[in-house]
Amino acid sequence: MCKGLIQVYTGDGKGKTTAAIGCAVRAAGAGLKVCIIQFMKKQDSGELKILEGIENIEIKQFGTGDFLIKDTPSVEDYKAAEAGLEFFKDICASGVYDLIVLDEINVVVDNELIRVWEVVEAMENKPAPTELILTGRGAHEAILKTADLVTEMLEIKHHFNKGIKARKGIEY
Image (spheres, helix red, strand yellow):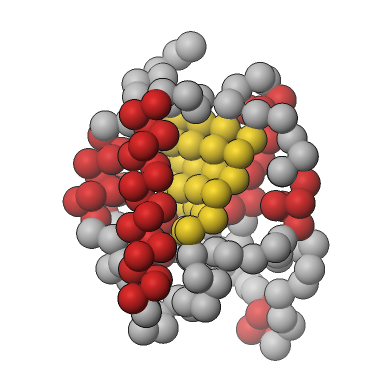
């Protein structure tokens, strides 16, 4: 296997998690072993239902389901974020996965649930062949510098601004 790179999908636009899931599905289809670690999430969603049925994809959620961006985090939010980071470090040490997705990790760092240096250190210590994808708005400059590929999703127009709520099967 070739050297695994570090990808970051960030920005205020829609599609960061969707892009990461697309890569995960592609990797699983090629026979690679994938782990998706979702920070701040604890919910049933369309992607979870379908991804759980795909061989070679494992999904773990580390969140209370109560924390929203820019809320005051609870003690449980901090514990869940730290548990997610520790899980990531453990699976990196195992070397089992070809692709690891850290979904919404940038938001966790931006809200100071985890210190950025801990994430950068974990990024730098990933196994060489493992591909790593980090998602979430507000990616820290240190994360961007460590990455090999950075894509910014730019919001030009968004239906949320018209009061249209998240739709099942489309946004979750």
